Image (cartoon, rainbow, N blue to C red; front, side, top):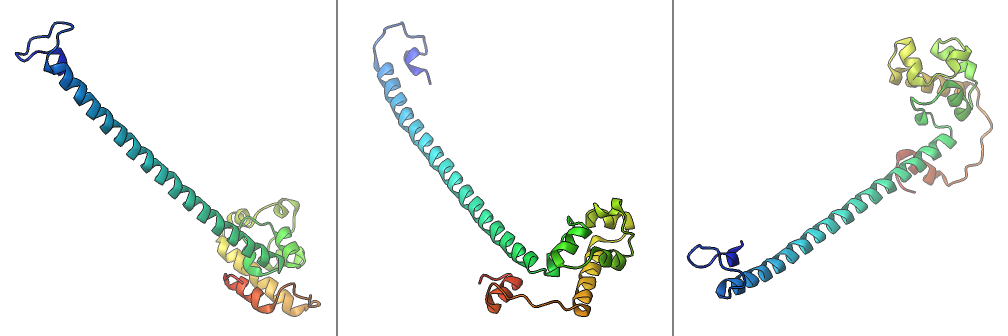
Length: 173
């Protein structure tokens, strides 16, 4: 690499000595400079491609998350029992689904105490030693039963029936 510091016999070249070695070394350093610039440019292009692909992936994930959130919001606003999640509390489920909370507590065979009112369904399932999915299914069945026994006034839909059924199926309207 430092060939210009050594003469042809392997002895150190005196300072300021001419000869072919310094010219060769300069030529080699010029080639390595071009090669170094090409490698840096290639690395920069690869990093740019990585940044663009990461951005596209993040944008796609965000788009699908927003779409899922809108579908869940539409289901929750409609009072659909499929919108019940483990993070919800019984009073929240009662409010969203328009069912009395006392009815849901009775369906779950849980006392309506202040300590239980603030528990999420997941925490309630742990306390009652039941799977959270079973607890949610019991709530869904209780809500459906309540709605059959107490039919309320039909509200006018804000969307066409085809659009709301497509949302319920997870399709785009």
